[in-house]
Image 1 (cartoon, rainbow, N blue to C red):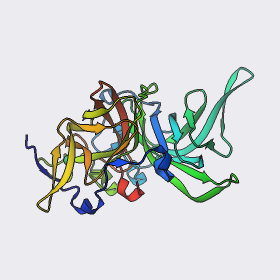
Image 2 (tube, rainbow, N blue to C red; image 1 turned 135 degrees about the vertical axis):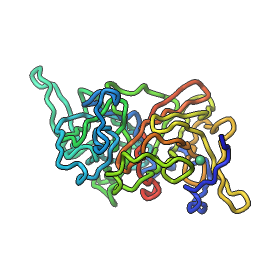
Image 3 (cartoon, helix red, strand yellow; image 1 turned 90 degrees about the vertical axis):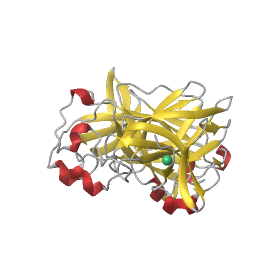
Image 4 (tube, rainbow, N blue to C red; image 1 turned 180 degrees about the vertical axis):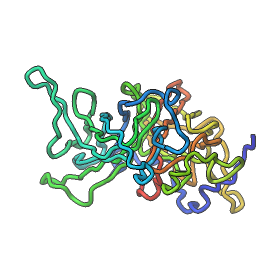
Length: 338
Ligand SMILES: [Cu+2]
């Protein structure tokens, strides 16, 4: 195994290198202040192994993207619910006012309530308000995001991408400024992911390896050897809310044959990336930012093209023995001002 890689992904981003440790909670603003954790959605189809996967139809894998034209008018119909915890670490009150997803034509914020011993679902008027320091818990039987008119089956043990739209509220309770859009991934599984109290993961994203236009070619085998198309990287902010320091020591993903913890550095004017010896230190109550040109989770030997609009599960393993599976949405996170 070659241990040194030219960081082809990052060369153009040298200037974006910045301090590894980001701010404490109190200074967070905008999208940085909103933590969405434990997002998941109910499957509408069994595991990949039990699925028919015709070569030409990306939707069969549940990992497909958003190009309607390639769906050939296929309408899976179907309904699912998405659940998550949204924490507001900012100073201002925020309000979840909408959501969208490439997998569903209609996405609405719903609440389930028992009325006369019957569970009823209704849209939540005005969205979900979350005050400074508080959290909204979306869970079965309560608040949830309803995915309707599904355009592809939601396959167990895969992941989907969603965009959440928030308003920031002023003192008078009215929305101020532009709405904030946050792209998230949700694990597709039968029940809520295990909760990890000590490590929060925010703003995860993985770099696409194909353009959205390339959907029709999804079945193409990635070329062997080093190329733009068979490696990618996952970025995020890791925040250690536990009592003791910890380390991100390894990771895995069904999307990659090999996953390494890397750091990109300039050496003699050339961007190089190397495995991080001993993993990434996570000091107590600090955020550590994995970003292009710096620390990243490297995906090697990709098993599938990473298509914008989709998402992949990524399992993070920590020195403490804890592990955490997140869904990383595939999109260009640099464009989102993260
Ligand atoms: Cu790397």
